[in-house]
Length: 530
Image (cartoon, rainbow, N blue to C red):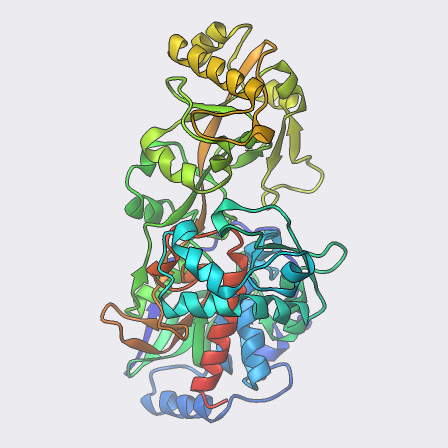
């Protein structure tokens, strides 16, 4: 029996991605017409047998194309999937609903890895063993899980694999608390292409843009293809593509209000603000669930409390507040709540639901040098996405007061509570000793020259650390732990590592995006005999 199972999705507005596929004069992609991959090869015997089976049932029209591996999504995970399958010898089609490929990965700058030659070159001693020993500390996850062990052990090799396409990395020398005790964040080298662009160039002839996956096709319990409709720009083709294996690599669900509210109790008590790119609507999870696939770790959504409402685009977009770790942050009563460095991590985002809202406090000097930065992925060309404090205030009302008591009145703080918090913070800055939360001296700066201002910190939804549940090799599993034949997932659509063991996540998860894509592509190709 052959079934089309459609997901109830609609494409979002196009995002600023990068690169177009070639089209002939009819507006159709010629590779779709022939059903051939970039090398002109037809699908292997697995694809051919599926075609014969479909023809025998009489339940399907002829496919518009076919390939050994069909990938849904041409961001970092989808491109890594496709490239890995191509390197194994499989024919590949990569579908992208937007007009261009790249996805959120074009905005990713922090790559997590341990035991790399970049660390060694920078005098940093690290190893997979050390990283695994700290995994629970900085993720709240399970370091004994096979996926975690494989990812950590192969993180350095993942960066080497990406660099082999023509890129390079440099080590960020500071220690990020959300990655452990030594520097593990690697930055793409300046002047060279980003990994997502390099993979896109490698797989360009296999990418089919403006193609929205509206459902998956299943026969006798096996996923055998993808039903597609027009892309967000109205182009592309409709029909279905036959596949030996289908990989869902569509990104996270940070902009899906229903899914977020279902999985994060209390978040709907606060205004909605996004730090996820516009395409993160969780459409791939609909496809997975329609096939009986299970979801895991859905309650671990990356929440951040380090931004203000965007002054130019308005809610629900945000502008990240610079130097938030070097000022005083208080709650709605005016009480200091944490070492402000924690606002640069997801820790305070999680606390926001019970303690928020929060406010960052600046004196007149600090306000004059403050910078607020838009996220970039949603800014049109020609609009300055970085504002200073005075410019922000000219666009958005900000509580202000000549004295601490005046600011408390303007912001709605309890005046004695706020005045005491400000006084104690200034004493810590003067002495260099933070007796409340232990913030280092270098981050303590006095707040003493009026007028004073309080800028509201909003709760932003960013990464999704939950998604399709996977086995140890990237295959989608059902609620009983059984694999669904022909179906795989990668990247943020699988919560990066495909289970609960990632906890609340870590900085630099783009490495896990590429790693999981490479794993899914290699597994899918191997399952087809490559």
